[in-house]
Length: 157
Image 1 (tube, rainbow, N blue to C red):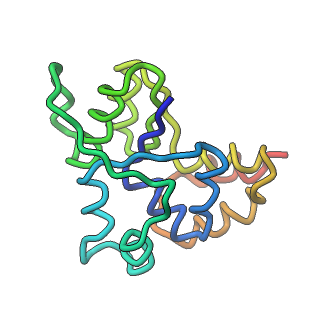
Image 2 (image 1 turned 180 degrees about the vertical axis):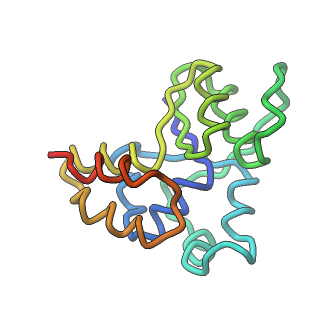
């Protein structure tokens, strides 16, 4: 099984200080070069750029090959490459992605999908963090989710 990440979940986990939960949850996480470039871009938050400039050993950058299928043209380059990596790895892949179009496309291709909130929920259930505190920190970022959705995750036991 391979865990392929798009920029969004990594970005938010770094910003709220919980990026280290990925290793105990998933072991190794793979990202494509486009995600690495997005995280190093001058418009990325300084904390994200700093983290990506010296990534941990559990994060692997892997270049996708050419695909024999068409992907939704609304995907950005990072989303496209992440889904392409999952496609090349096979049906057991999990795509870590927040963008709605990307989530739908990955699901359409048969991959399991989870985003920032799902990752936080898994970490909470494994005792790796307090989800209420993590959601409160997430609210201080530009993460986009309805208040009702954020509250439903905050209320998890």
